[in-house]
Length: 106
Image (cartoon, rainbow, N blue to C red; front, side, top):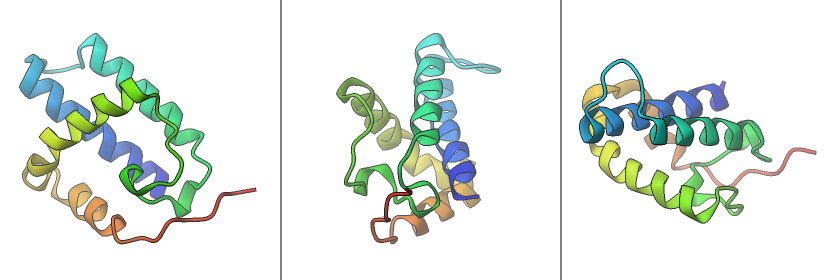
C-alpha cells in the first residue's frame, strides 16, 4: 500500500511540474515521462519497500545524481502546490516524513 501511494505521489508531482513548466495537458513531455518511468523502476527496487521513508531521508540513494537533481527540482516546485491539487497525497507524504528509517527487506 505504501509503495503504491508513493508511486502515485511522485507521478502527481511530475504531472504538476510538467503541466505548469512544459505546458502539457493530457500526457507528459518526453523528459518528464522518462523521469516518471525511472522513478517507478527505482521504487519497485527499493530495498525498504513498505518500511520506506521519503527518499530525501533515505540512507541509500538509489537515484543517479542527475535524476536525483531533477526529482529534487520537481519536488521543490510541486511540493507547495500538492496541498491544493492533491491534498490527500500531500497529507500522507507529509506524515511519511516522520517515519524513522526502515530496515531492508531480505
